[in-house]
Image (tube, rainbow, N blue to C red):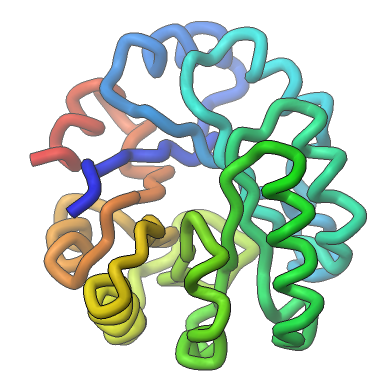
Length: 219
């Protein structure tokens, strides 16, 4: 089993206290920072561009985990890698689940020297991508509909996590299983028990004591 990693989502960071909160994160046990990049087209919201990522690269100690919720991942993946991403995941749905195109982008991202993997929405069957599992470093399962923070955890997606864990053990793969959406004290244990080793948490981490909240998710 991989070491558990907590990836606080900077979507929930208080930008009026950005310097202070990054300093606290640097003292915490969070090893990744999660960036939800939204283009206003693939999802209805708009968030970060590469210049924001460059700023975090200068000040944050964590690996920068970029989740592309964009219509054109082939265009934007290299831009965010050059800006400092250490991991880039992208939605299969942006390619209409075309395995060949997904595989080509995974290969290109690896050639640029980063971890990379795929993301699926709650309604997308994970079994479609079994042939790609030997090419990914991470599979991100959305436990809410992508686009907005603060949604409730969809427990039904945990069947995908269980399937991924079984395939990982069966084939001796090394990919991480990440989950994003509605992670808190009531849901994280269910995700871990199903097989997740990487937890994205936004609202829960940034409300109150950031370091203590992250430690709670590591118990």
